Length: 160
Picture 1 (cartoon, rainbow, N blue to C red):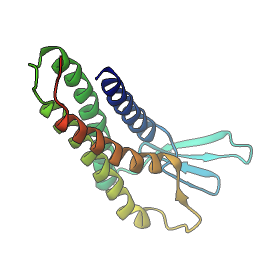
Picture 2: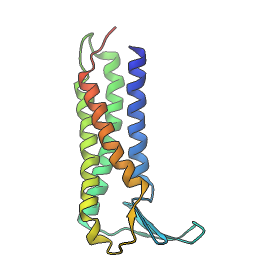
Picture 3: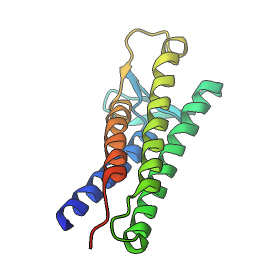
Picture 4: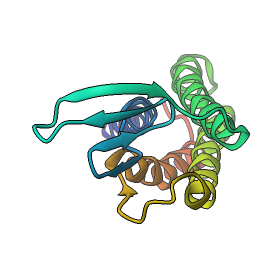
């Protein structure tokens, strides 16, 4: 049981790290000498150093992506906190429903954010030299992992 709990905690922390990195790092879209994330657009020199950074567009869809990514982090942190609280207060045989629901909500929020960014990307960047960066990919990787950990929490029963 201890090994199972450790594995679940490691999975949850991995999801949290993926969510934080994908929200903060300026690599949602990369192209010729620039990198774009949810917060700013940066141009880089040929050596890789950042030259100029400007705030991202104030489009409503980008603000919804920002909000859902932040919500996913909040739900995941809340889920981890609730897991530790339930671990010590839940009766024997009880299930971690609340923890699982919040983790599933975190997964759905990150899926919504990445989907909105994917759909709205062509109207925002007309240059075909752009490609999705690693932070965007990490957001998509965090989605199934968050759902998986949420389902594991719902199925998990507390033992002695």
